[in-house]
Image (cartoon, rainbow, N blue to C red; front, side, top):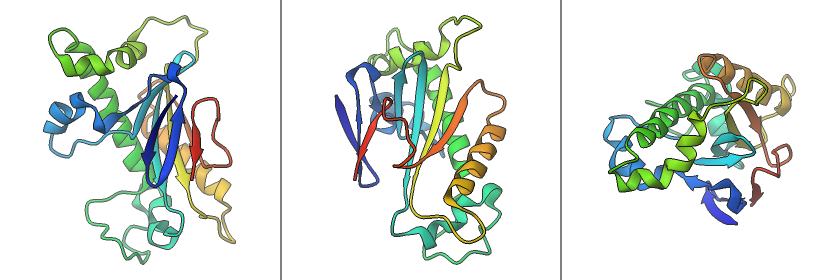
Amino acid sequence: MVTFEESNLKFTFPDSAAAVKYDDTRFYRNYVNQLPGAKGMDFVSLWENSVVFTEVKNCEGEEADNRWRIYPDNEKLTTTASKNNTAGRDSLDIEVARKAALTVAGLYGAYTKKSGCESAAELENLARSLWKKRDITDRSPLLIILFLEGDFGCESRSKKMVMSALENKIKKKLSWLDCQVSVVDSDTYRKEIFSVQK
């Protein structure tokens, strides 16, 4: 088992998941991060025959300041009050889709640089899993998870509706990529992929 802390939550992955905190890897810091505006998913891991990208957003207790982020396509960016500086930030659907795309690119970089680049070796198994040949009956090689913690339900939209809308918008933005998308919280996540402690 390996445990990482992100947004004041502890995520524990089984050893078989080969999990990494992606932006803490040497390859990300030394190579991917050289690209201005580079971003990456919080965790990259394995589960069954899929590579799993997980992005964590723990907004518990700060829902009011993050409410604009749950409305897709920056719909409420300029109309919802927030104490946080929103300059250069995006709604969660845009942020997660962008981070997923850049993480795919970073893993491809690690895959192509694996010989002769010591820091790429850390990601080699994860990267190779994305590009191995698959049978037509195999599930998608990539599962993208947004772990969204916080009470975002209201009279007009339940949290389940909020999560479903975000999931659909992320799927649409990543329709060019063979992937599954899932928006979950501490009540709905798949415990066989990782476990979470507050």
